[in-house]
Length: 497
Image (cartoon, rainbow, N blue to C red; front, side, top):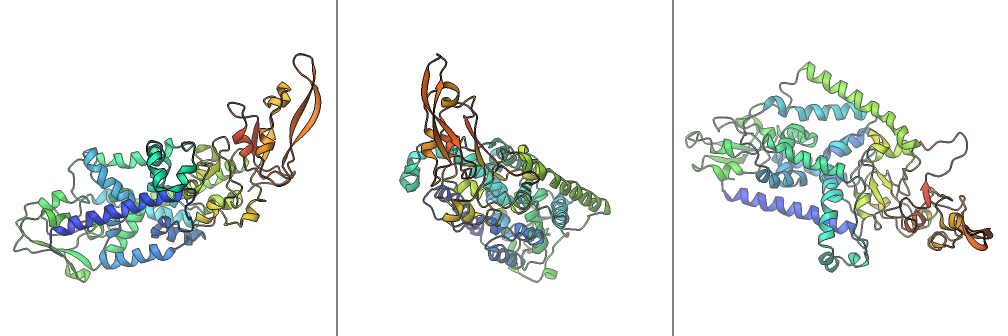
C-alpha cells in the first residue's frame, strides 16, 4: 500500500460508517421502526470483555470479536475507520484548532492502559464501568440525548417525509438532564485543544485494548531509508503522534492506519505491508513504562469507584425513579445496564430519560420514566427488545401490560374535583388498564360557595395500577400535576433492591 489515495479512501469509509451511525439513531427513534437489531454497543470488545467478567454479556458479540481479530491482523484500524467518536473528533479538531503537537507522548498515552486496568479490577468487584468510559456509548449518548433532539426539532418536517413514524408526532422531543451528556461530549472534543485526538491517545480504554492487540499486528508502516530525507512531513501530519522524530520508526500501537503519512510523503518512501512484527521498526510497547506507583493508583482508583455501588441504595429508595417495564430489580438493573441510551432512543412517547445525581453515581445515565414528559405506551415493548444486556427484559405484550413499574397517587389538594369541586375526568378516561385502575366516585360535596354539588371524584385502585404514567402525563393541572406515579407500594419489610 503506497498510493496517496489510500488516505482519501479511508476518509470516505470513515464518513460512511459515521453516516450509518447517524442513520441508525434516526431510524431507531422512528416509532414504526424495527428495533430488533441495536448493534452499536456490540462493536466494542471493551464492553464485551468487561460484561463477560460481570456476567452481563451483550447481544451480537461476534461483531466486537471479529473487529478484535481483524485488529491483530491489520492494526488499530477501528479508531480511524469505524469509531463514531473518533470520526467526530477528526471532524472537530480542525474547528477547535488543535495545537500542532504531534510528538510522541509516552508518559500520558499509557494512561488509557491504566484506565483499562482499573476497569478490569472493578469488574471483578462487580462494577461495570463501560457505561461511563466506552467511546461508542459516549458517542451514542452525545448524539442521541444532546444533538439529535435539537436537529430533529429544526428538521422535523423533512424527517416526516423520510420516516413515516414522524408524521404521527405532534410535539418536539427532548431529554431531561440532557445538559450532562452534552457537557461530557463537548468536553471530550475540547480536550483536543491540547493536541489532536487527545481522547484516543490518552484516555480511551477501548483504544487501549486495540493498542495491546495491534502491537502484534501484521499490517505495518515501513520506510525506505534510501528515499526518506527526514523532512518531518509525516511526523507533523500524524494525528496520533505515532511516528518517531526522524520519520522512520512507528509506535505501532498508536497507529490507526489513517494513511495520512502516505499523503504527506513527497518522496515515495512510505508504504504499508503485511510483515511479521520483528521485521519492522516498531518502537515502544503499550505497557512499557508503567510503574508500581501507576499500578497502585489504578488499584486504589478501582476500589474507590467500586465502592460507589453503595449509592445503589439512593436509586432504590428514591420513590420517583421509575424504571422501564421489564427492568430487573434495582441492584441487578444497575449492574447490568451499560448506559447505552438505546432504550431512550426507541421510546415512542419520549418517556425514558437519563438519570444523573438523583440516582447516585452508580445510577448515572440509567433510564427512568418521567411521566410528566412522556408515558409508557400500553402497546409498546420496544425498550426490552433493544436492550443489549437484558437489564430490561424482553416481555410479551400481554406480560408487559400487567408488569407493574409504579403506582399512581392523587394529590387531593391539587386535584380539580377534590379541591375545587369541579368535574375533571381526564385521568379516568386515559387509563389503559382493562378494568380501569382509576374510577370515578360520584359524591355530593359542598363547593367554595357553600353550595351542594354532585362531583365525580377520581380514585386510584393501587392493586390494578401498573404505573404507566399516562394519567400524570395528561393531567391538566399545571406544574407537577395532581396525580403522580411513584414506585410500587410495598408491604412492611420489603425492598426494591
